[in-house]
Amino acid sequence: MRKRPIIIDTDPGIDDALAIAIALFSEELDVRLITTVAGNVSLENVTLNTLRLLHFFGKDVPVAKGAAKPLIVDFVDASNVHGKTGMEGYDFPEPKEELLLSEHAVNAMRRVIMESPEPVTLVPIATLTNIALLFAMYPEVKKNIREIVMMGGSAGRGNKGVMSEFNIATDPEAAQMVFQSGLPIVMAGLDVGLKALVYPEDSEEIKTMGKVGDMAYHLFKRYRGGSFQTGLKMYDSCAVAYLLCPELFEVAETYVGVELHGSMTAGCTVVDLKGYLHKEPNTKVCIDIDGEKFREWFKDSIRKCV
Image (cartoon, rainbow, N blue to C red; front, side, top):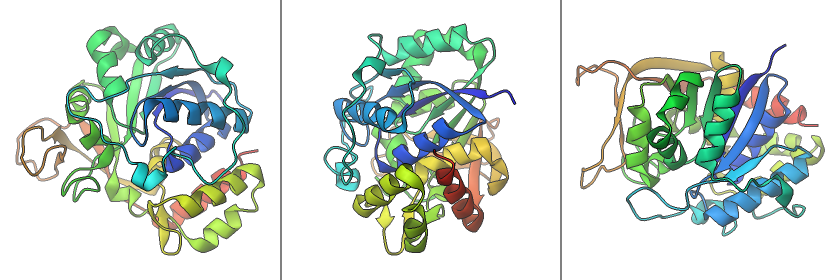
């Protein structure tokens, strides 16, 4: 089976760590490059976390460091959810520094995309600053991108602002540039992330699934994306789940824009499910997920991380 080439743009982050693990150990995905961006915690910390994860997983994937702050707005991280370093709660090995490229993430993405004999899928599970910069600086890459499958946005309420999801609200201008890129986009946002839950009994089961399962269990104990007792939200794994198991999702093809000027709604993804804006659809929006099947898929995926 021919593997699907992907680039992961990330800011680990506890739920990022599990999404990356599933992608790296998948027999269907070929992770060509991992790029980092300031988001859950600082750029330095997310890059170190990525290099630690790769050492821990025993995977040699090149890493490129990207944007340290959003395009325009001030940077505010999510260390209140992920802890000061982003991945507290587990004793990781030293970062595998030799995997870190000297080139900026945007240049590395351009090179990998343009050198690929087949179109590459971008999988941003973080704020979209790097992706927006890529399209602004090197629009020629679009011809060799299959699609963007992202974690971010919401068709309803928010988790950073009243109506704004964290990854989009952290850099709304970048997000708007990406949604206007003209490329096929799949948005796996809060609507499915809130239902992609791992319960205590799942965590106990995952704990026995080798070293990756043990890592997951200990990170889950520190993760404040929900409650360890009532269900932890696996937001970022939804993007990888869509790549590997799209039948888990109910999808609506519609127009998505980003509110940039609203005094109470800046960073909101305006998901026009009713067609009020009379604009052509630009995004496949995941509006629902089979939570029970997701749990089984997630556990089975962690079990395969060996």
